[in-house]
Image (cartoon, rainbow over the protein chains, first blue to last red):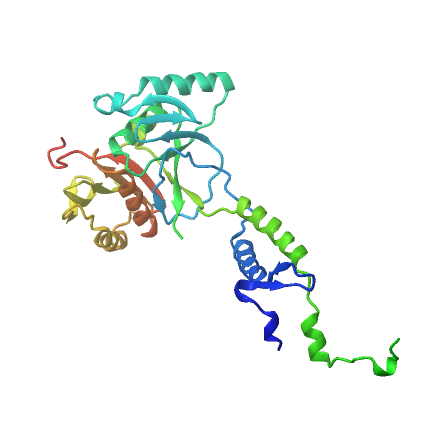
Length: 156
Length: 163
């Protein structure tokens, strides 16, 4: 083996005097990354993109989500399909279970879309107290939603 | 002019040292593939947990069907967790220093499920101050114990007093 041709840090000097990088080690790294990415590649993907404003709870559930009417409960706001609907601080301390702003929004949207679906998907931040979730669910039930599911991060 | 007779012939191992494979096109292809795969990669998978609301919230109690059906209920509070059937307290598990006794709850639920005929439905009644992640954890425990239909409800401060 000709050791004279090997220079430090993977750079070698070509016949014309120019330095040429030794790409072999880089190809090895790229091959490993490629194998890892192909292994984790999912052809299904996620049909539903969780809202960026919230941190979803972790669950062992394996059931795949399907697109439904989405209601997001962040720490400070209740949103539906990305639109701000009500502030949680406004209704958190009230005794009433109904959230009028949310009910109005849901009913208006139902009327506009002529939608009669009964399925709602709740995306809720993991630190939100149950009192707020309860009020949102109650309001949804008043807007004729009967089948609920909650979006969670699947535990590995 | 040299005669071919005097041409230098290298032994095969020396010839191998001089020849280099051009890996630049391979690198180009790898970079494109890695970029594509990273952009398409899904690092977290989402799932759903299905639940129902109590019948009196959704459609009102159906009086024609007679008495409401008794369901096993898990009470989740910041002071204690409990398994209740109707107004009868079956198990009580204290919450110590904010640590919820989920393992004990799973064991008790499995035992209660074997004892009773109520093997499908369960209700989780949580106190208002409980974080939603704890409720989801209890839902997981109930589902793993074999209860296929999970309902969510609200718990009173003192179940025996009904307040």
